[in-house]
Amino acid sequence: AQGVRFYLDDFGTGYSNLSTLLELPFDVVKLDKSILWSVTEDERLVEFFALLASGFGVLGTQALSEGVETPEQRAFLGRCGCDLMQGYLFSRPLPPEEAAAAIAASEGHGEE
Image (cartoon, rainbow, N blue to C red):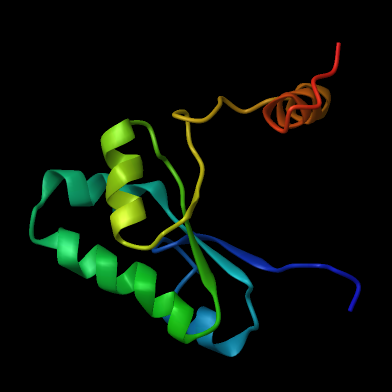
């Protein structure tokens, strides 16, 4: 009701596992960059990743892939239905002021 969204970070590593996902109401699951990078190294994982990304929709959760560095990775994620992405392809990490300016500029409301 307050507009707060819950994200599960680094899914696929440490405590970010399937049981955590099923127990708590996450809006977005951030797939650890190691998952995407593994796909580019092992063709067998391509279909698995596509199923994983689309499977979150069944749970009412969006998938966000971390570690996107190339246009090829971006295209692959789009084919998998993973529309939320972050990584150096889009921007390096920015301080809050620079991030706000970059967002405003990308929306056509450039700040000086």
